[in-house]
Amino acid sequence: MSMPLTVVIFGATGDLAKKKLFPALYQLCLHKHLPRSLDIVGYGRSDVNLPEFINKQCAGIKEDPQYAKHLFTSRIRFHAGGYDEDESYARLAASICEYEATQPAANGIGNRLYFLSVPPSVFGAVVDAVSKHGRAPAGGFTRLMIEKPFGRDSGTFAELNQLTSSCFRESQLFRLDHYLGKEVILNIPTLRWANQIFEPVWSRQYIESVQLTFKEDLGTAGRGGYFDSVGIIRDIIQNHLLQAFMWLAMEPPTAMSAAEIVKAKVSLLRSVSTLYLGDGDGGGGFGSVFLGQYSRHGDEPGYLDDKTVPAGSTCPTFAACVLEVNTARWRGVPFLFTAGKGMDERVCELRVRFKPQPHNAMMGIVGHQNELVMRIQPDEALYIISVAKEPGITAEQVRKPVVMDMSYAQQFTGAYLGDAYERMFLNCARGDQSLFVSEAELFEAWRIFTPLLHEIDERRPQPVRHPFGLYPRGYHEWVAARGVTIRETWNEFIALHGDRVDEMRQVFNELDKDKSGTLDFSELTALAKRFYDGREPTLKRIRAIFDELGTGGEHREHRFDASEDAGRRGQITFEQMLASAQRMQRAFEVELDDHRPYNLENQKSDRVMK
Image (cartoon, rainbow, N blue to C red; front, side, top):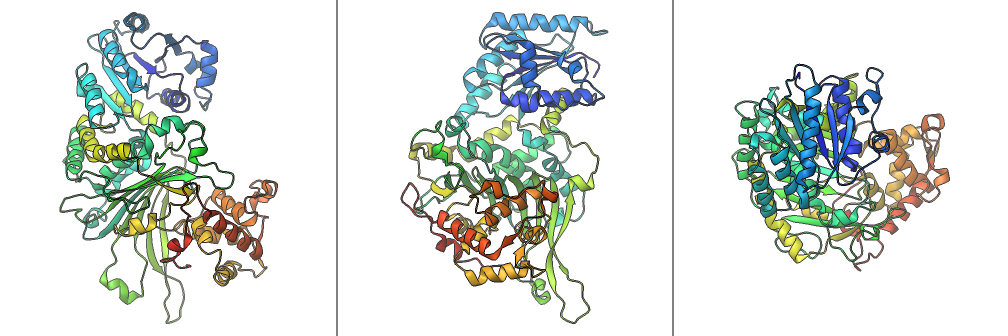
């Protein structure tokens, strides 16, 4: 990229710029994807002390010896001015022109990229002012990277879109959903269309259900005021998960160009039925959606304990909905979208479950279905859950579920994965819109969700209160009624069987391979693998189980120490395991603030120990 490039960041003092934007620009300059003579301008209302600003906002940059950090930060400057002050933008433009004039062979021409991470209240003013004062001279490009949210509903998006389209062409607008830059999402088209084995079975004939899941093991942590105005559907489902859904379900485009990809995505969205709230079931379940809200459990505060959350808020922190796709390929296949805060783990994954076939029965395969899992975060991976014969020479052949695993860390050792924002900056600089969200997609996306969101805003239905770390009461039954089966989590497994001493003893004895009367690291790992598709769990996950079972979460000084002999000296007795299970069961059965007990008996009815 020989022409000078200026990147102007609106919202440069914010958390996104600190955690993602400045580190992404550093990496792009390090690898010379962007020129190291890059001009970086932070824009904000109030002036800053530049060295202090740089120290704070660039603290997350991981310096590489090949490119000294101070060389990068020397390219950063700050411009203070109001978002609606023409004079400020005129000064900004003049300073950019000065930079462009100093670049060799540029002839005063340069490219300009504006990153907008600003509140909707000032969005229009910024777009209008950039159009009036900030355009690149003839010969250079002017492009806007626009961070979500893209409105709150169909009406507000139409207003925002009118503002941008009246000033800039669609080819100049790069609406950013950073999930489109994540490695596993990028691999979906390769998985489907660069291989021969997947696309022939990618239809209702072979696929039973598709699950798109986003869970966080954190609450709002003081950001509840903002979250309460948005909710989990707008925050995660309508954008991040919907974008993943499009790559999973769209028809193959005629070419991998931005225009053809958009055409295929829009065609898919037009076949999706609009969502409405519908009638309630007396809990959190409605016709089109299930709503929950996490509450206090142990040391973890509930959503309503966040002082920034309005008292008595009914804002859902957990939501699930099923999209119906009315096409020959997908008719009748439920696409389950689930997103929640205050859950048992941090994970985002896509899970395709295949239908059992008649010939499976003669092999003694009952209750085991093939699944293709795309783990977006953490620990990126693609893996298939299949069935294989256990080694042995006897006539009785034992067949068990196995995992055919492709871990990114192992398969691509030494490869630089990069952050999603690096890809988004780079693609915008190259003018490639294939990883960005088009106007046409957003019109259809908001068409699907707006009626549901309006009904939730107006009717304020009461979400199911659920303990931090556990799915809401009734959720499993709600999804089962829609043709989807959800795997239980390890803490559900323990809590659901706290009163079944004989079964708990049987499980303990099966795990206690050395018959020592205690479970050590390797034996606890075997338990953890049951809840992670048979894959090797991370040390963090094993530690979480050990802490809960071994100490009941009550004595932090005795908790599992990952640094102590590689974290393998801890042991758990059956009495500890049973006591912790019973404590968890009692905690999950307590009367909640809405005076509706979390009744575990309903959750036990259709589950068995495995």
